[in-house]
Length: 368
Ligand code: SF4
Image (cartoon, rainbow, N blue to C red; front, side, top):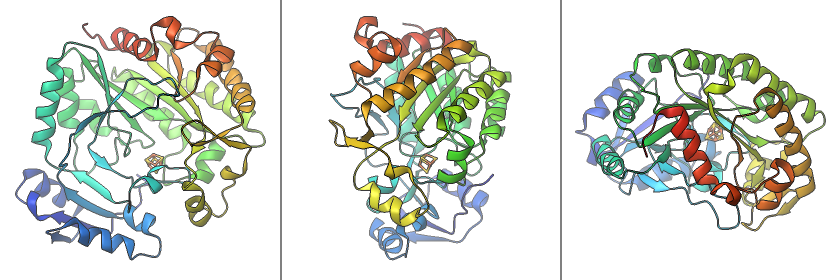
């Protein structure tokens, strides 16, 4: 495992008695400081030379005092996928230059929410709604970084396996899959990897697993019967990128059977303007912010549209050549991009949310 090591643990006094705390403490085996207010943790992180780095090495065990399940915010300008986020924790022990979470939390702190009983109650209520739902834990963190310490999947995967209306998507750049072998997933958990070229992984995704290892982990999950998904996000434009992305697509389909893939998403690099100075400071050798960018309708900087369309067209043709029936979708692109690259817009097929629900229905044995 190549995660950055945790150097310090803070524990919220209010959760001290929960059984999850004992388990995590025993697995991590680090001295822990009990705090009565989050301010202590924030002050500790803020006072570091590199608060983002410090936030990645400082774990705060606390309760999620808000809702565990939220609708993905999306935006009204782009085709939204109707996803639900299961907020199990925040931030990440890996260190990608482009990671939006660096500027999302103030300050960024590695939190892991231990009030699992509250989370399970919310899930039970959600499962009562007899409508297909796709729920993921990998929006505010990586889904599998705590497997070695907390093993939340041991409860979540069988829980999803016992109902027939929702699928759990675990998104990761790790290979922390060992525990997944033993769980009764009943096809209701999709294990998903972010994929990128060897060049991007080596230069922009510190402390993540190499592409080869991610694909091998996916192959093992495939052998355990898990449905899979892959996310080419962010696709980064650089000299020689086309040849490299084509090779990634080829390696994907020489390892994984297309019929086991619930969906593949594509998204070119985009960033909120405030991330730029963080990348400049923390990743001085990174060139990703020096492309041809223009602000989008959601204020994020995106590659000039014709460049995005050109690369998407190629990605689609490589993917469709190997896997003509696999569902490919865009995260946050407008109708023009869909039409020019895929030849249709989501509305013509009932909307993106419905397209993904349909694929979840087929791959995960859901009921409507
Ligand atoms: S793996 Fe994901 S969450 Fe973690 S640093 Fe990279 S982009 Fe951020």
